Image (cartoon, rainbow over all chains, first blue to last red; front, top):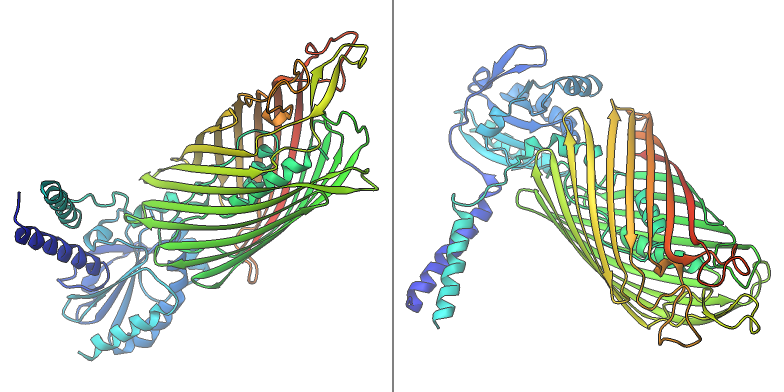
Length: 168
Length: 77
Length: 392
């Protein structure tokens, strides 16, 4: 039906597309970071625009997510360390209800801002496809890196990226 | 030769569809897994207890096998 | 003594079940359990004690160890010739290692079960793969068991065990679990098990009709003759649904068929109801029905009437109904020091067994009941479990 040449070409094309999708799952990303406005636990509105000009890491987490709980103290340490250099960490919580979030933060407080996204609008806008996810945004508001999941040792990766973007 | 051509084209097309926008995306997003992550939604909340009950049954019944479950949970990482 | 062999064989299957994997995204939390169980029914009393601990060595690597001891006493319905009360003990040890890499969990385990007239060792491996955005989990498993079967020709207190045979069991399993909606997960399991070797229980006997002047009971006992191979296939479908006020309902159906002619259908319904962070209440109902093995008979017409003969009650046509309730109380809901959580659980079940072609010949016989007309056997069993679980 088709000549061998055409067939090989199609196979190669398919292979390239499949391979590229595999690599698109993690690592560098691009495009402007979607703006958002959410409320804090206290009910105050806040959003990405409040941190214009800073390097921002948006961390998507939930009270029911084990690895999210694991990385929180490390994110807190990182936030305190790099804040003077113009870095902010925003914890976007995806729980459907606020009380468990409040309870958790009372027992294990963090110093970085936590915003609530119960309707999952921001999660959708950022195409969150893994829990937890950390999106690192540069001073110009461009998404530079997406880190999916958390395993001990990943905080070193975060710090490398943050330092790189702070220096820019 | 015709069969091989058809098979190869089919596979190539399938691979293209799977990787392109025409594919089926996971319809339950990771941030929607709160209920599935609840311990009451685990297949085997107490594996030792379930194994013991299966053991009681299999020593008195003629059937065995295919019990247990996997999957679900928070889907984190 | 009569129940034990079946118990030990079942222990092997239970060992296979210990290789149940949960989702392949993170390894389960560290946990230690101390467990007590009591089964009483059909003239048997079985007390079990167990301790289990599992811990993550690294984020990707976990180990689990389990020790279980069963103490059996009593005289079951089919202890016909030996009227003595039996007392025996079974010890089971198992070790499991789990390795998680990306979306795949690999598990390997080894279980050893020892009692004075039955020894069985199982080596099992399994693999669990998360795919399609972690909505689908595929599991494959294989287990190999060596069994050594013996017969105690002495008494409970003065045993004299002769080893009568070996058997090899291989189990092949596959399962797919699929998240259907935010509230609903479903799964299907398939397991094919083959055994070869000495597959009978040496303590059970068949009976066949004889004239009353040969034996006043009207029947004589004989040895069971089993085929030396057995292959079974079981398929189970199950679903779990989250109810909006925070509860879960589970339904399952299992179909079993084997080369001995046994067909079994299992239906089970569970309801789980938590109360805040402290209590979890669970209720379950289970119905099981099976047809008899094709070489089973309660009463054979004469000696050697068939190539294969059995009168083991496990191979009879029977049905059973179970009602169970379970309560878990978190006495440490938010942990204490390095413990994340501590719970205590009580689980009680009541099972009603009805045999459709196995008669009670221990309590009934001539002259009131000629052979073959004795009342069908039935009994109630109570199963009690209590365990303390510490998560760390």
